[in-house]
Image (tube, rainbow, N blue to C red; front, top):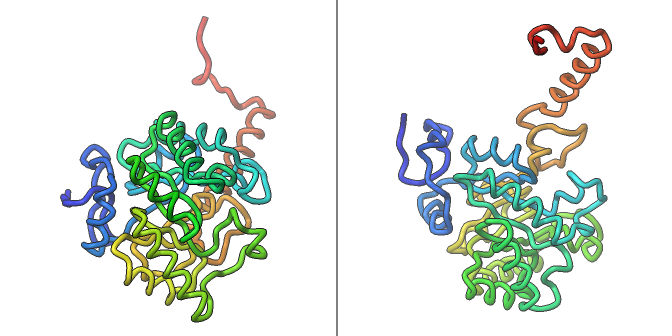
Amino acid sequence: MAQHSLPGSGTGAETPVAPAQRKRFRVHHLAEHKEAGRKLTMLTAYDTITARIFDEAGLDLLLVGDSAGDNVLGHENTIPVTLDEMVVAARAVARAAKHSMVVVDLPFGSYEASPEQALQSAVRIFKETGAQAVKIEGGKRIAAHVALLTGAGIPVFGHLGFTPQSENMLGGKRVQGRGDEAAELLCEDALALQEAGAVAVVLEMVPAPVAARATEILRIPTIGIGAGNEVDGQVLVWTDMAGMGAWSPRFAKQFGQVGQALSDAAQSYVAEVQSSTFPGPEHQYEH
């Protein structure tokens, strides 16, 4: 089996590293991946079952996203998600992730008031979950927040472009960074996050050339979601990636049809219970 100097799964031309051989993915590996031109891999996870599967599959990073709001909890968007809910989900994911770095969203209302509020929320996540980093939406306006968290020893991922917590201000789920002025502002925000100490920046729903420019000017890696291929890594909401619904965003690819497989299994279960073919003799205990 091929051996790699960096943790995580291999590229398409390499043999993935078996879970037992992988090391814990840590902050310094982010810079190493960018320098080596090796793509970072990230998926969302909200529970122990999926986190274990993704960790064993070789994901570098698992994002406990506030996207749980509209993908798990039944909300229309991410805004109602609470810090308490993020702690529960992050704790479950961190328990299963033996190799992947666990990154947790600070939800809406848990950091905007002040850098001190952000620190208090991030400290709670670190102390109660076992996660290794947090993610915050915004650019220059939250640079002081990032600096305070970084100074306290908490790695921070930034998030620019379409920022779901600001959906009402942005006028819905709209591509951000279009036009020269908007593109320049996005790059300025990215540089501000870097200078404040952020270890990486997520770019969501950003024109590919703009994301490529941000990637070029930053020392820290960029992770795209709907931001083209010239970024340092990719992230998707796992339910979009696995085909769990009838619809997924334009920027997502369904790498499997897990939703259909689960539906088929449930229908088979119903049919066998109703026909008394399950449980069979092999599923029963003798006297």
